[in-house]
Structure formats: C-alpha cells, structure tokens
Amino acid sequence: MTTQSVDVLLVGGGVMSATLGTLLTRLDPTLKLAMVERLDHVAHESTDGWNNAGTGHAGYCELNYTPQNDDGSVTIDRALTINANFEISLQLWSHLVENGDLPEPKNFINTTPHLSFVWGEDNVKFLRERHRLLSAHHLFADMEYSEDPAVLAEWMPLVMEGRDPAEPVAATRVSYGADVDFGSLTRNMVAQLQKTDNFELLLSHQVEDFDKQSDGSWNVELEDRVSGNSKVVNARFVFLGAGGGALPLLQASGVEEANGYGGFPVSGQWLVCKDQDIVKRHSAKVYGKAAIGAPPMSVPHLDTRIINGEPALLFGPFAGFTTKFLKKGSKLDLLKSVSISNMIPMMSVGMNNMDLTKYLISEVMQSHDERCASLRNYFPGCNDDDWTLADAGQRVQIIKRDAQGRGKLEFGTELVAAKDGSIAALLGASPGASVAVKAMLEVLERCFPEQLQNGWGERLREMIPSYGQSLVDDAELLNGIRQRTLQTLQLG
Image (cartoon, rainbow, N blue to C red; front, top):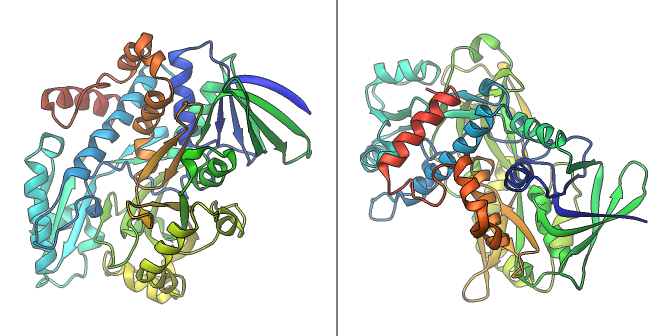
C-alpha cells in the first residue's frame, strides 16, 4: 500500500472543496494539496447544475428566509446575513475573473431577476411588510414592489397570463439577481488548481478509513474504485466537503465533535419545460411560499436556468424521501449513520416531525397531473405535455442534540471541526453553494488561526475587500463593493 504526504486533503470534488483549495493556494502557494472525488468527474453530485437550485441565494426572493411570526411581524435578520454572505462569494469570483483565473462571467453566472410572488390578501399583506422592512436596509435598497397586475405582467408574463384579475397579487423584484451554474464554476476552479505544481486530483477514489497519528496528522486510506488498489494519504489537515457524504465521513474519523450529529436525507425532482418558445418567454426566478410542513428546499419556484451555457425552465422542486445520502450513494446510508451517540436525537426528530414525513410521502405519491396542477399556481396557461420530470440533487439536513439531549432538525449549514483544527466537515444544505466562500473562510478561521494572524488576513483582504468588516452594518462599504462586483460579473 503506497503512502503519500500532503498538507491539505480535500474530500469531495464540489464547490466547497474547490473554494477552499482556491483560497489556500493563493494564501500559500507552497502548500501541497490533494482532492479526492469518488466519481469520475468533479461537481457531479450536489454541485452539478441539474442537482442544484442555481439561485444565487441572497435573500431577495426566498420567503423562508424572512419568516412571519405568530403576531404577524416579519423577521429579516437571516435574509440580511445571507445577502451579506453572498456578497462575499461575489467578491472572490470577481477577483478570480479580474486575474484571469475564471472565464468570462457568462460561463458560470448570469443576470436573472429575483422575484417573490404571492396571491391572496393575507399573503399580499405579508409581502408588503417584508418589502417595507427589507427595502429600508441598504442591502435591499434596490428591491421593487408592486401590486399592479400590469407591472407584474411586464416582470413575469407567463405567471400573469390567464390569472383571475380579481385575485389580489403582489411581487417584489431585484433586477440584478443571479443564476449561478455552480457545476461550471467548480470545474473551472479545479481546472485552475490543476495548473499549479502542488495540487493533485484523485478521481474515482473514495475514503475507506481514518487513522489519527501521534503528530496530529491523519492517515487517510483511499480505494481506487476502478482498479481496487488502496493507498494512504498522510495529511496535516483534512476537509470533508462531500455534500451528504460528509456526515458518515465525519463519523468515521472518530472525532469527539461528531457525537450526536445525524442526518435526515431529502431528495427532490424538477418539472422541466421542453418547449423552447416557452423557455424564451420567461427570464426570472419567481419564488413563492412553501406549503405548510414543507422543508425549505421545497419552496416552489418557476426558475430560469443557464446550465452548461444552455437556457432551461424548471419548476419545483418536489420533495421526496430516500435513505441515500448522495444521489449516487447507497440505500443503506441512513441506516449506517445511526450510532449510539445520535440514536436518541434521530429518534426524537422522527417522532416530532411526523408532519414532515407525511408531506414527503405525499410528494412522492403525486402524479404528473398533480405536479402540473401545482405549476399552474405559477403558470396558469401551462400545457402538461410540455413538461417532464427530472431528478434533482440529494440533501442531508442536520440532526443534532438540543439543550435537553433530544434531537433538533436544522435546515442550514454548519461547520463541525475538531478542537485541534486538524479536520473539519461542512454539514447541511440551504443556502449551501451560494455562501461557499463565507463557509470556507470559517474553515480558515477555525483551523488556521495562526496563519491568519501572520499574513493570511492581509492576503484575504486583497481577494475579498470586505473581509473582517460587516456589510450588514456598513452601507458605504457595501455600495462600493456591490458596484464593483456587479460590473465585473456583468450583472445588472
């Protein structure tokens, strides 16, 4: 069994690992990196264009980021945080474009207005209040609002055609919202990494075992899925950025910090339009309100996509349930993830989320006619025969212990790192890829604190000018940065 040594081992060939690798090679070009991907291509699981929502999640259109409280008030804090975090991603991508390390922006990001659309008096009242609160903040100052059907017909003609003119409707719009092909973005970042001397890409390899060494490094056993041969990689730092596969890998490492964590897998499907004449008539991401009991990834949206350079029109996603943690994973993934440390939290979540389970079952059992009936809420004039069903990606929501030792189901992303900083894993889903840069900055802060104090912080500010400052609090800083990123990435 051969052994090689690296400074950093990136497990998973998705946007998270590619982002962390990109940052590290620019912070210290002498670092030796290896990326391990179990498939024969990078970015073919959660990061792939067809498996990912593609929305540049900025809180502009996603109503689940601004929940309505029992008293009717609206909370906007999460939307502000997500918006500021997406701006961090835009800064790094702008830096890479300016330096020739990413291609023309249209190859991975395109202007696609972000709209929230509701109907019914109560929902209109909610959206009006949401707009009032958000537009008063500098992050959302450009958000438009209208209840005028004529204006809405200009913004989203397919949505308004054939709609009852007596029905109260409202929408908000941010014209410079983005559609991001995270698969293309990731493949381009990995291609740049491969041009450096200190990077190795190991495709069709999967992690079999972890062994912590006395010097704090990790011996990670890999299996070549083609030849069946094994090798060991000794790494001073290991990052588990394997999407839904990160949880079982974290558990396999045996670190104390993994105790109590479990996963709840949720799959999804899209309705995809086959008629290119219809595709050309819609250029927006129109998000509505999620059904009661639906997970956040199931917020319905009629969605313009540019995937591998080709326009597409999708509606969904429709949630489903599978025991796999990866789209190309095993049906035993969920069962194998159950351990003594997480059994109680997982059982607790199962018993306390029966409404969610029933919802997922009902989604799986829907017919094509029933799915198209949901689509008519957003496209009243749709023809069922113009739409086909396609599988979306796999997500694993976090289950963790609450203060009482029971389980709590989380719908965000969370970084779990060993206390010595030698290994870290990113768990969870939404907002996921859109905030990859912010998430990987947290990895650096948790696992490389000394380097950040000794030069890395200044280098990060060259790539991400707002690093160490608050875009939520500083309007002048935000406006200057946003002007640059919109221009560089050709958004607007």
